Length: 292
Image (tube, rainbow, N blue to C red; front, side, top):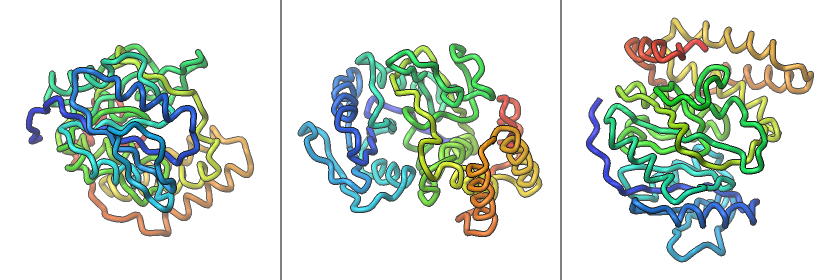
């Protein structure tokens, strides 16, 4: 691991399709109210030309929807700062020191490459298990080292992000966070979950997206093909086939998942960059062996 100390400069990336006219202004208001950091904020319009934003916010217009990971890559390249803060356009920062606290975590421990706060639904709905970066969503109030993060709102060292190669842009949607954090770990860093730092985010279901099941399966295969040592690829995929068979009860959903799985096997996953066996061991010790 080679990382220089991070300062208080933060590049904040907000991706929006312009479909949340009430949520986006609220998200921007709470972001611009943050104290203790030097913010450089960009809103990336994914198939939308951003309008009606505060003058201190820069914008990037993408004529077509390029997907979540590639849109975030565009935003990361457009902002300055030692830390990159990725922020959903329907999130909200309930206090003015959320970003500052995230930077504090990165400054306090040079091993930490990325840090995730604890998302809480503003209307009191139960938090989905996927928001807690531990198997089964266990221990939502316990901080510590974790092997993945929830992508909706988190901070990452710029050098760790760039060393990981950024987001896998061609994934479009789904599992891009698994690859990013695996590659952050492969540089010698760890992920950190900081539940004492709270953000607000609506508790929605990922299955609301029509492409969820297909891309869930396709990108799962791509993650394995791109990042795992070959002896682990088959066990990883078999594990997730069994998990899916146990979880999915809908016929159309299962058919979409099978189609996506086949697409992942038969189409180009992109650059292969397998993690080291040392990273495999470190992830295993952290409670997330990369066959799960």
